[in-house]
Image (cartoon, rainbow, N blue to C red):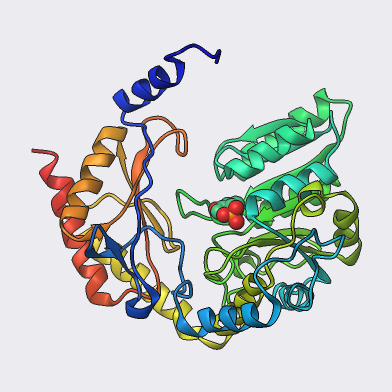
Length: 399
Ligand SMILES: *Cc1c(COP(=O)(O)O)cnc(C)c1O
């Protein structure tokens, strides 16, 4: 885009015409009167069905208190990168606890999941090498491959046979190795799981790394919340690079890569997004440590989440709502056009339910949707009321 007087305004107007403008809205809910699963929009209490706070930890007073205590002890900022003088005891302890939690040798903190993916992929994959990834992988994995300069081979979403076919074409047509297979564990906009056992076999056969970004699986899936790998019974041999984020089920902020001691040591030398950036505040690490303890202590949060997910699907089926095949707390209702998704979202808000519309380019053209996310902070009655309102909002638009 060139710098013409109206270039930006024209681009914005065009997005507006296509119902694709993004607008942030303010959630005014305060901790002092926070009720789980609720939000405050323009002075009005609404039920929040579009946050990734699956376990209801983001506003838990116990975790906020751990953060406040650490802030008094360590201060707000770290003042430098982890490799200069910014690495503190809370970071050190959190990395050890994350490694234990994920059953890996070691873990390395990053400031965000976006940075974890950029850093890990660009460190491991060289320009000209090949990567294989699901077509619906998170934007950060797509961008990570771009940054590395590798060629990206995309396969049909969730299709292990298509992945194997792409790997075969790649290997017969490229002189460079297939260095990396990368996938979301749980797909962020669809809620379905990647075929990890098959992808693990494929990666081993190709002598390629397998990276699983389990942003939406950790804390939620598996008997003890260890995520997609636990769900499928896969170990660190089968999934050598595990990326986790801390701003979703753990209700805090930040991310990590977990793996072998050598992998983590190597990433410390080569992952530029971990090296050339200020260390995460220690109070954030302290809050995450508290969240990790609560997530492991309160198995009921995971169980309740499963119950609410089943309840949502049962009620939605009775009312004739068209659901995707997701068995996770991410439950998309695909509506098609962006304008329609905005209208149904607005109707829901008027009824007291916050479910944001997800539109292209976040999801493919023609698949604009409402992405309902459930949380252990919700109650059964909340979910029942949501489904009723959803059915009304979707059906009234059909008339
Ligand atoms: C949210 C998300 C990320 C990014 O994590 P942040 O910590 O929010 O930057 C990466 N991958 C997936 C699959 C995600 O859903």
